[in-house]
Length: 149
Image (tube, rainbow, N blue to C red):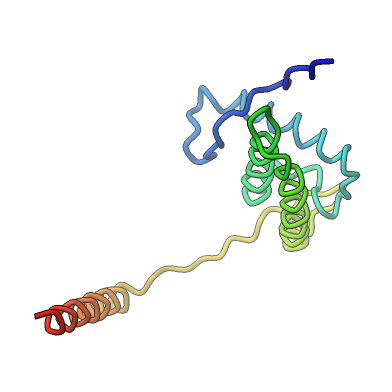
């Protein structure tokens, strides 16, 4: 008996920061459907993926990457081992999601915004670092040329 066709062909991975406004609604709806199904299939606790997951960029991009991984793991031309690789990714990503959820403190009933780290690079230190790096690379090239010549 032939296998039924895969319901959705493997699409290329989505780079969320690059989505155009005209593309975003469909991608959000697709990701939401996948996340809700994933949470149900794997009995994911709200301490791992809170209901406000879509308001946390780390969770959005992590879940989108996991969804993209799953899509690429099933198909007629994929190796039989890719399903196990995807399950390993689920395990790894689950710990990343738990860590992210614990940082926000969101619960099933309450959303808390991400804490934003405020920092900037000291321009003088940056310029000195780049100058030092260039000098080191030049010295390595010069030493290599001297050894060859």
